[in-house]
Image 1 (cartoon, rainbow, N blue to C red):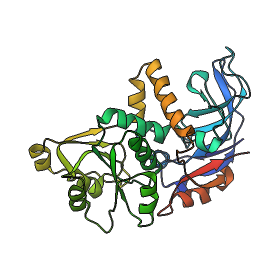
Image 2 (image 1 turned 180 degrees about the horizontal axis):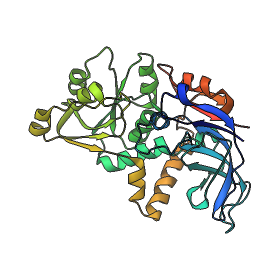
Image 3 (image 1 turned 30 degrees about the vertical axis):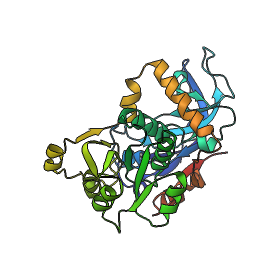
Length: 323
């Protein structure tokens, strides 16, 4: 089988290689899955670079999220051959994977692979952060990197709760895209002073921030909070720590907290997890929900896929697909 692996951390185009490897053999409690679609997330790139919360065991494949078809079911018969499934695992950029049957999720009827392979990380993170935010109807949310897949999911989910949404972009053309999704205010962080514009247009500041960037943009976003506001940090796209204004924290009684989907899910009961999955999958299957794909590439063309992923102003996910 083909798989994309790396022997040392580094920039993806420098360290990734494709090779032929033996087919994996499932254990009794595992299923063998033929992977059909994988999406490229920022966490995948950080994992390859050795900058993620999970350290790769080298040599390692990349990718955390995918969809596929079960080729060999588990011996207990919980997941049968032919079942279309979505799943998360360490190393999905290969043609076949073996994972415990308890960790796969059968796809809802009618859900295409292109949606299923991105149905977990970003929409579940958006759902979880909205649940933990405490935001109420009519309150303001600011999302940095609003044109990301996460940002688009968060905008749509927030609007269903009648939460007002402000978002930052770096490309002027992305403004119209987010406004069509329902964003009430879109700011170009490259040309506008968000720490001035946002408080002026949100009646004194936002109540909560979802920050995917960090660095100086994170610091500017922090200044957009009103008193007693909260920043929820879940990404570090800037690859720089955010400089924190201690005075803002003290005099406006602000809170900064982290959010990692893995930890949030681990702290839920099985019943709570299934309820959350049901709500997210229900959202994804609605005709009105928008799930963008910017390009699909064969596993062998991973270099072109990485280059497409790195294209500034991209609107939609880049997928690695197999027949």
